[in-house]
Each structure stands twice: as structure tokens, then as C-alpha cells.
Length: 266
Length: 307
Image (cartoon, rainbow over all chains, first blue to last red; front, side, top):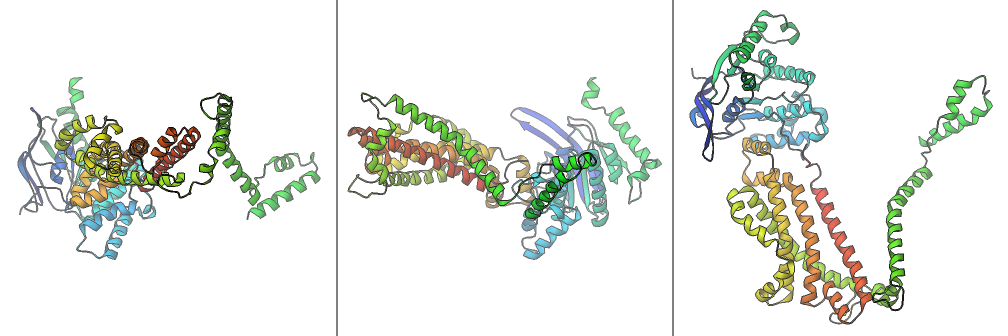
């Protein structure tokens, strides 16, 4: 059986004038439907580049990306992205920010009232119905990220791409959102790729953790399975042996074998 | 509800003197010293009138002072410029009858202003359309930017009146020449500010548009226009100011009905007081134009500020 998402020998090189920067080289990754995969690595190792390539925002220099056996060549709503800084449109209300996606993606498939219901449905999923008429500037950072998540979910993507979605949030808000994402993943069974640099987050949320080596020419160093049953509760995991083992393995990879650029210099 | 609050306050204050101040010291002291807000209609009227006095007061004082200084400085009979009282005395007929309709260029000031505004409206509308169009092109396309920007940077420094002989030669008529001068004066800030606005649209907004596969028209209407409206209106506001500067100068040379030629005509007939009245009109109209564009900008760009 062919995998749902198949990344084969992906390489990305940025060219600026005469200067060439090889960011990724020979990345191979297969992801099954419904899987939650985290990509972790030090800053500047090309995690976001990998995600942008899957989104179609960047063209691969070498290799191919196949989603359900279709070449990924340009961006599309079947690969929705939740951006690190939410990237909501500030002149639209919370409702309109989700509606702009729904109206475009389901223009022919849903009637006007169905579109409206679908927007409200997705806002309810992330608990943001109460603020639907507010503008992004009027809600907190965590709420903006929730709306960004609702906008992405509302496109009914084949794969949801999360680019450090909780990176800019405080620890408590982050924990709440992680729980929300786990709940949504359990309910809808989305396929997800999440970029993160938080070891606990990766271990808590993922089925597999992909660990990237340092750039330039970064690639996948190791893939760590997370054999924990779902639903997971963060309180129960603190003492869980598998969880502790997974965390230790990731930490070992990141800090012993592939130290960050600054650590190496020191 | 407010009445109730007031009634309660009255009851409390009435009761306070009757209570024994020694026996109930803490309680009565607390009640008596609590200030009760007057929130009745009269209080609100008083508040509104006070804030309007605060707003109007300082400019009123400065204007009165300036007029006083002017009156003292130009009050002597040998003064080359008229004093404010003399201006009112000399030019009372044009101050009192701005709507007078006469023959040829002998019209009330309102009609002169209206004629000038008509020319500005034409030239400025043209400049807004062309300026926004070119600005979007320059913001979107690096090649267009590289090709056109040097030319624009040179042309925009040409003073408005320097264009006038050329446009008179081209159009052979005063009116289109004036419109062209307005256009060429006000188009540069609109182009430059719009292109900066388009260039500064965050990559994230572009990425959102790409993921949604918005068509170029949808992108223009739903992302680009709202995102660069604040920049655009900065350009439009500078543009309207420049057009009003240019029209008065251009009309002096072109003639016909218009506030610029009115001033020139007054100078040629040594009606200095009329010039001063006209200057007050020019200033007030220029100020209003600026405010109208600024207000339109605020209306359109409500909520577009980046977070």
C-alpha cells in the first residue's frame, strides 16, 4: 500500500545571486492517514522549509512530494497551514477570517447557509464562538491561534500543517491549546505535521517524532515512535516509563549527538 | 435610575447632620464624606459644554491675539498692508455676498472656489486612479519598480508650475492644462505610497492567499486593498494638499473664473484687502480638503491596523 504522504529524496537549495544555500538534502518521510507527526530540531535546521515544501509554498530543488499519489506542486487548501504568528487578516472579524476560507474552498459545494453553519461549527470546535464578531486585535494571542486553527480545519484539508503553532504562547495557554489539538485530532482523525522545538510537546502530541540534523544540508536524523495509548493526559504521563524513555531519546539526539550551532561553538 | 441615585444621596446627606457625630463617628463620617456624583441631565450638559469650551478656547485666544498684533502692526495710516478692520471695511461687499452672480470673471468668491475645486476634482481623480494603478504595479513587480522608479524620482521633483508651459503647448487651452498640472503634481505621492504599501504586505497574508488559491482579482480586492489602504491614504492625503497648492498657482497664469486668478486680478487692481479675504478662503478650503480625505481614510481603513 502506498503511503498517504510520501516525501522522497527532498532537497531544497536557495539561490540568491551567486550564493547557494543548501537547506535540506535527501529527506525521506512517509506518513499514514490520521498520523500525528512532529518535526523537531534546532533553530535554522530547515524545519519550516520542510513544512513549506509540503504546503507547496516552496518548490523542491530535488526529489518529489506525493499526497495520495498526486504531485504537490503548488499551495492548496488540501494542505492547510496554521502559521506560527496566526496570520489572521486584521481587518476581518474572527468569523470573517474563517469565512474567507470556507467561502472560497466550498464555493460550489455548499450553499450560503451551509457555509455559515460550517464556519460556526469550526469556531465552536476551537471554543471561539463567543468572540466571532471581534477583530483579531481584540482577542488574546492564544485565541488568535485558535482562530487560525479553525480557519485551517474549516478547509477540510487532507493534511494539516502546524508551524510552531504554540511557539509564541505562554506555558499555560500552550497547554490548553495542546489539549484542544489532541481532542480535535481524536475526534476528526486529521493527518497532521507539526513543527516544534519543544521536546515535551512533541512527545505528548505525536505518534512519531522526526528529528532533524543541523543544517546546512539538514536531513532526517532519526524517527522516534511514541508508543503511548490515546487519549493521553499530561498528568498521567509524567510518571509513564514509555513517555520518559521517548523524552530521553529526543533529548539525547538534540543535545548529545546533534548539538545546536551555538552549543557547538561554545 | 439616575434620579434614584440622586434621591438616595439627598436622603443620606439629610440624615447625616441628625446623627450623633460622636456616637456614630466612623459610620457617619464615611457617609458624609463620600462624594456623590451628579449625573443628571444638567450635569451632563455642563460637562459637554465644558469640554467644548476646552476645545474651542485655546484657538480662539490665539486667533484673537494674532488679529490684535496684526491690527496694531498695520494700524497706522502709512502701512503698506491693510489691518484686519480695514480688510473688513474695504472688502465687505465680497465677504457679504459670496454667492453673487455677475458677468464674466466678476463672480462671488464661492463661485471662484467652486471653479477651482472643479479643476482639482478632475485632476485629483485622475491622479488617484493612475497613482493607485501604477503604485500597485510598482509594488507587485520588481522589474517595473527598477524600470520606472528612477524616472519617477526625477519627475516628482519638477515644480508644478514648470509643467504648465509644456501642458499649455500640448493642450492649447487653459482648463485641460490646469487639470494636467494638478494631476502631475499629486500623482507622485500616491504612486510612491501605494507601492510601499503593496510591498509591505506581510508574506503571511500572501501565503494565506496562495493556500486558498485566491484569483488575482480576489487577491486584489480581499487582501491587497485592505492591507495597503493606510499607506494609500497617506499618499492621497499628501496628494490633495499638493493639488490645492498647484491649482492656485496655475490659475494665476491661466486666468478665467477661479480663486487663483481672483487673487492675481485683485493684485493687478491693487485690492489688497480682497487678496487677504481670498487667502482665508483658500486656507479654509485646503484644510477642509485635507480633513475630508483623512476622514475617508479612517472610514475605509477601520480595523486594518496590523496587530
